[in-house]
Amino acid sequence: MQIHELVDLLRLDEVEYNAGLTPHPVMACCVLLRRLAFSCRWCDLQQVFGRSAGWLSTVFTCVVQHLNETFGHLLAWHPHLRSYRRLHGFANAVEKRCYARVWGFLDSHFEEMARPIYRQQDVYSGHAKGHGLKY
Image 1 (cartoon, helix red, strand yellow):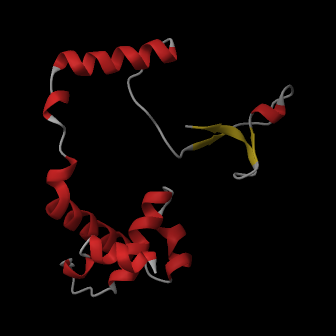
Image 2: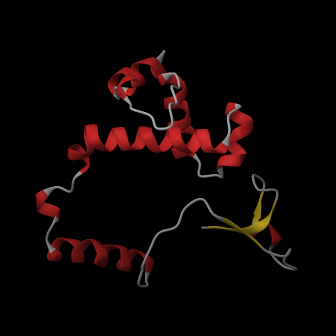
């Protein structure tokens, strides 16, 4: 029942879709949540939703555009964070914690590698069923 509440709160019944698509708001919400929860290719989600990659991509894009138009003002930076001094303070805190200059953050990318000879358990991923590092 929580998904129905989320559909109402996000006003997903008001989304205007391209190409004459008319997905049910609950289906659109599920596509959005699944895509945001775990980054993967659209062809991987075809099996989950039983729809084409193009259909999924269009629904996702239209929902995100709707959310941006409807709630974008709530996502804007707070005025106190818009100063160079404040942003520099954040950068210094990250640098202090990481002991290096950070120029970006990556997420949900598993880079496979050959099985190492030593300390295999340090780079083995049971989820990806292989050796590698996740960025």
